[in-house]
Amino acid sequence: EDKVVQSPLSLVVHEGDTVTLNCSYEVTNFRSLLWYKQEKKAPTFLFMLTSSGIEKKSGRLSSILDKKELFSILNITATQTGDSAVYLCAVEADYKLSFGAGTTVTVRA
Amino acid sequence: DTAVSQTPKYLVTQMGNDKSIKCEQNLGHDTMYWYKQDSKKFLKIMFSYNNKELIINETVPNRFSPKSPDKAHLNLHINSLELGDSAVYFCASSLRQGDGEKLFFGSGTQLSVL
Image 1: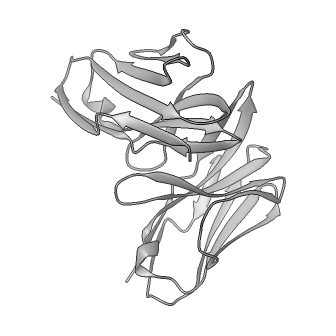
Image 2: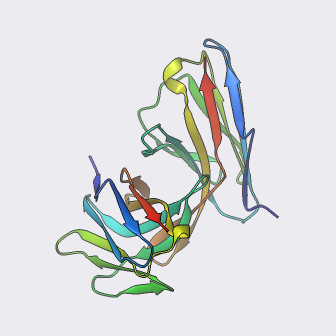
């Protein structure tokens, strides 16, 4: 069965800190890895990664994939209270997206 | 001009009842999904339809029956509701971009079974 493991499960930081979220996976027929941010309602798309070593950036967020070691990291620099959310990692394999349990990030002012 | 819309947003019902959740997407996507998110925020796929055809059916009790009248709609009917069905149900549709499938989610239906 496909497995997606995120760590840590939760963390609390102060505004301005940098956070690093981890996602490791064991799947057959890997196609892509995606990161989503979930605040109160629907998960919203952040990044899709398909190739190793190519960093994707969007503002203060960045992510990279290592297909040899089977993991990805999501970095958030200069955190703000609006970054407080659950961050979900998902891996697509065999046309199915499997999600990890998420990392709850709380940013305190 | 909501992309993926599902109704109702909240559903409170008694055990044993039958209920439906509706989903519509106006993105022109071919694939639609139902996901269940439990209290620990774990999102698990239930069903996937591509152009009205069922392509993924995870181990979901047969009390759950999806129906796709056309590729823009995917409804979920649940018979004989049980306490354990309480969760947030998300509809999604997807667009294949290169090697990856990017999902767009509806805002969820919070189902509470009493």
